[in-house]
Amino acid sequence: MHARDRVVKWLGRVALIVLAAALAQGPAEAAVCSVAGYGDLLTGCWSTGGPCTPATQPQVIQIGGPGSRSSSEDDFGASYNNPGLLDDGNPAGAILEFRVGPDTDMDGYPELSITARNSSCTSALTAVFFNVGAGITNLTDLRYSGASTNWALAFNLVTGTLNTGFKADGFGRFDAVIYNGTNPSPNGGNPNEILAGQSLTWTMDIVPTGTVCNFTTETSLVPPGDAQNQRNAVARFQSGPQGGSAYIGPCSPSLYVQLARLGVAASDSKVLVSWDTASEIANEGFNVIRKEIVRGGSGYVNRELILGRGDSLTGAHYSFEDTTAVNGVAYRYYLEDIDRSGVNTVHGPRVAIANPANPRVRLQSPVYGEEIATADRLRFQIETGEKGRLTLQISGDPTFAGGVLDVPAQGRREIRLSANETRRLTDMAAGSGGHLYWRVRGAQGSADGSDSATFIFKVTSASAE
Image (cartoon, rainbow, N blue to C red; front, side, top):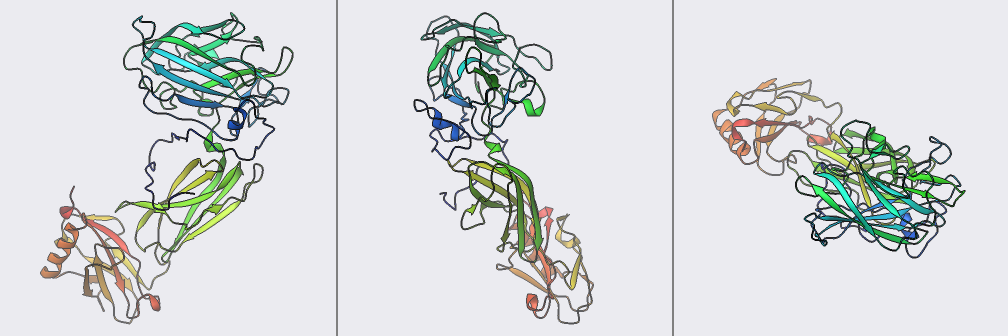
């Protein structure tokens, strides 16, 4: 499914997930029907971003579907569901496409167009709430065509925690709302506005204070409220004049797999990665990703996808043993889950350092990760009851496969290097950014367990900093 040697470019970045523009349909987790080519999108999530250069591809937010939330005006009653459902139990969803375009009406302002595609089976879309970035001070002059009744635009900039903007029950307040009727807080509306399977495009002018960009990305458009209520768009649906209604939020890819625990446990040349899921929706499986902290580089550890076994109610327990870990090397481990449409979500990291648990030779100084100003100040101190021949080894390679400085350590609790050995150590440090690994080997090495752990230290005078 995925190339095993691809570079994991997104490690360490803010958690903004860029999804593919065409999603493969997977088994539905709720009673979702297909309507005019839109309903099948509810089995996946869209949330694309990028620079909002005029005439580029639209930025898309999916409302409803697995992982979404709903809240109706009965204050979190039966309709507070996952995925979002109306009061009468019917699913509702839409695709919102935001596009910043040129000044077609020549009034001196750039334009924003929003296309709402109703992917519901029975419900009508009656309002769209959304927030804007700090560089936008107003939206004006709503234009549209093809609707059976009037639509209106209201704008009231939300600043900080002030009680301004337009309320969408359960989701906080929003800067802008496009709604049916004359009330900017639509309670009722006309169910004939955007019916199931239909779409409508609105266009309006943007009054900016600077560059208009990232109009619908999660990093720049964050509604007020607590962390759970941070949404950048919400739609309001109702299933008929007397039917159920609800405000429904976006599909959230991170909710496809709800991770309950992720842990690592290191031992001699091994790291056990284990995790528990609270629930899994349309989960194909997992990959374990490892990144070396000091030398960089990352990649998949498992040869084959670890197949998902949980479901939306119970989750499951998993473990994977990395037997390629090198003693003394600090790794960051990440867990990647992949849903049936190919969307990936990354969890972690967790840090682990493989080493023997109770070696016969214990390293005391320099301690793991210690920084030494110059090589001539190095004093290697060990503690052991080992009677066999001992050798101190130093290398810029944690596998000790490259250049190695061997120093006899038999009967010595403190090992000081000679002038020649110090010069060799300095040369090795210069070639490895100052980072060096050290260990003490017994007569039989790892065969009889007489090896020590492996520690890393840094000679700062030899680094490129």
